[in-house]
Length: 187
Image (tube, helix red, strand yellow):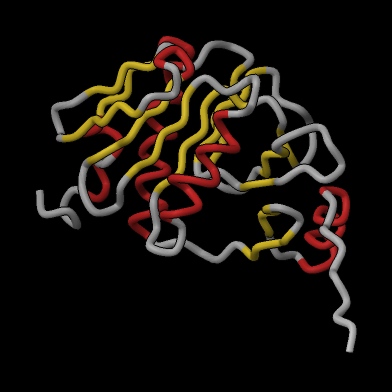
């Protein structure tokens, strides 16, 4: 008996699926992955990062959280993701962006491998991207990858630490990012 091989989904088909179902999906290697809700701690850390970034942004740049899709290439079979935090300068109108300069993911138990390996590889291949941040939910800890540092990991840990980012000349205090979850983390 012959097994049918499912054709990989295109970016346009993903958009149609989301419109038809009202559900968000990431697209990895042509396979749609339903996005599930996150925890309160996850959300508060993402919002803390947004709040640390927003007052420092130059005119024309925007910081968005979770609900804006990132198309990872111009190809019709492009992968797509919903980064927890994304900064774009000269944003596109509509439901997705293509030229992010900063991306961040807050680690969840279900997403560790995808965030640390798959997304890091895909994101750092973007020509526009200058920085990728991976934030822990379990401790005040952020792994930073910057183009200016040849994508080598830099680890920032502790409440008194500040992350200097060459992109947009940002300085991000960890205390400010994690302020709403400090009690959950035992501070």
